[in-house]
Image (tube, rainbow, N blue to C red; front, side, top):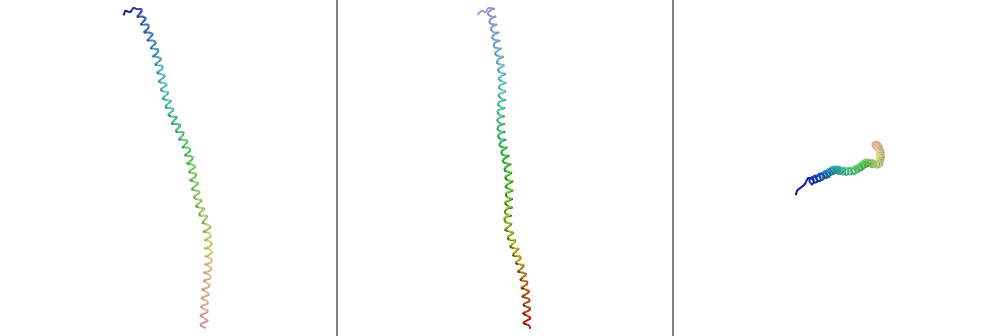
Length: 143
């Protein structure tokens, strides 16, 4: 094959156009690749943010449970305090119920003690009278 100058110039011109066209495509591809890298980087950030948001929702859920538990714990402490007061009141009530019975027994014992004192006093008088009677009887017999 024999080429002339005009054919060579046409081939060179065609080659230059092809190279320019290819370079334009390469630039477009590099531009697209840069955008793809940016998008991938953004997508990674989005995944991280979604993961963080999921953790935040979980933490909010846990915080809600914690608030509920704290509220419940406060109520339990109040109830325990109330139960302690109730136990003290029941103990006091038991003593109060026992006190009238004890007071009645004390009154009975005091009454009995008063009778005992009267009886001892009477017994002393009886002994004295007996002693006197014995002396009188002994004198009469001697006389």
